[in-house]
Length: 169
Length: 169
Image 1: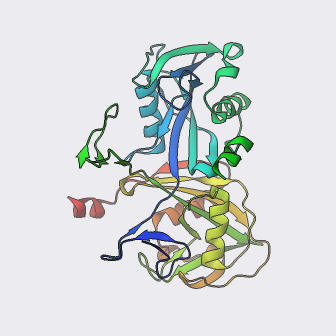
Image 2: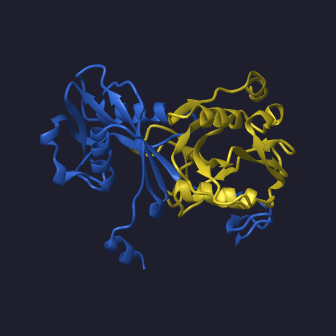
Image 3: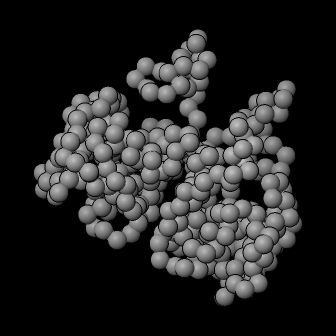
């Protein structure tokens, strides 16, 4: 049942029998802008959403790992590449879908890569050859541009697209 | 039932009837090192764990808010103080309890404060008067020291205390 637990200030899902409170909180996405020499590693998505569009390796952080470990794991799973996780590019927040993306800079330790299960292709792109009009999400352009700009890390909160906003009303 | 969903690589709680997958992921704690003039705002905890020990305002990030909004909310709830959330102090990770703490610098906009529901006292401390031996968690000392050091933001992963580790084995 939805109710406000004692000492709390918002409704939670509470079991009326045992009092168990099921908290729901934002999720962390970990990812990395990876590069070899002067080229950026991108993956063509083999899964929805944004099937067929290009992304940096990124995905939901798992239990028991650090954000760096998670980012390296995602790079391996999606692009079969080995990297060194260095400093933060930034934090990209999407409050309307309850996600916080933590993005690192990560030089590759070799030029080897291959599509993982969730990618239909992986490739290295010179900056000017990045498929800017075929990027999977606004967070990808942001990550690439903040990586290129250097400095930071940057913290950015995305706002809903007008279309997405009207669709849920 | 616990099983590995198709296309996944680790066991999840899956409903055998409808296929619903209950993902469990690390949670975000948002907080802030707040100050007025040269003094730091600390709260004496009125709740477990670490009841009676001192903390910076911090707590679990809620749905629908940004990390900055969450940090400002926690400052208000625990210390009844208004702040401006500025840049990141850093990210303090505790992988063995699946928490990622995102800590900001936050100047107070007035000298007003008061204990919220979860605090038995709130006070401003000159740096040398901070109760270093009565801090609630290792993350608090880390946050204060990284705040003082400046630069950054810093990313740090905590390791389990030997005692805590042996207790769960």
